[in-house]
Length: 197
Ligand code: URA
Ligand code: SF4
View 1 (cartoon, protein in one colour):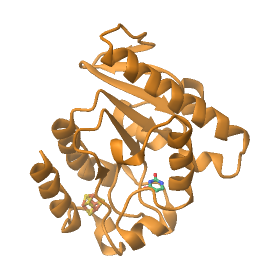
View 2 (cartoon, rainbow, N blue to C red):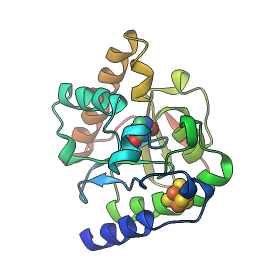
View 3 (cartoon, rainbow, N blue to C red):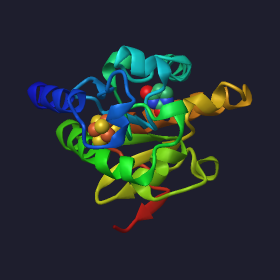
View 4 (cartoon, helix red, strand yellow):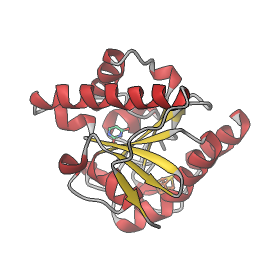
C-alpha cells in the first residue's frame, strides 16, 4: 500500500500529461496516512504548495489544520490531496481538460486508500467528483454513490475572507468525524443524498 502510493507520487512528480506541467515549480502529490479513514480533496495547489510540493501548506492549509484540531483529529491520521496536482497559473480554476487528465491519479489514490468517507472541499472538487454545484447549499451532507461515501463541505480558503465560515467549516469537520465514529461502531449513518451513476 505504502509502495503503491509512493509509485503514484513519483508518477505525479514526473507527470507531463497536461499543460499545467509547463508552469509549475513542483507537482503536489497527495500526502498523508495510507490507512486514512478520511481523504480530503481540494481544488489545486496554490503558490505555497507549488513551492514546497506539499498540499495545503499555505493559509488555506492552516484553516484546514485548525478545523481538524478542533475536531480532535491529527493531520497525520488523514490523507489530503487535490483534484489537480499542479498549480494553475494565477490560481485560476483548473479547466475541464486538466481535471479530466489528472483524475486518474485521484482514482488511484482512492482505490489504494479506500477511505470510509471522501471529504469534498468546495465547488471545484464537488463538480469534478460528483458533478455537483452550489456547495454552500449542500455542505454538511453525506452522499453515497456506488457504495462510496462522500461528505460535502466548503473550501477552507472560503474562511479566509469570511470569518463567519470558520465555524461552519469546523462544525462540518466535527460532524464528519462523528459519522466516522458511528461507522466504526457498526451503526447506520444517515445518507442525505443517493447518487446513481
Ligand atoms: N487550495 C487547495 O485547493 N489545495 C491546496 O493544496 C492548497 C490550497
Ligand atoms: Fe499531470 Fe495532473 Fe500535473 Fe497535469 S495537473 S501535469 S495531469 S499531475
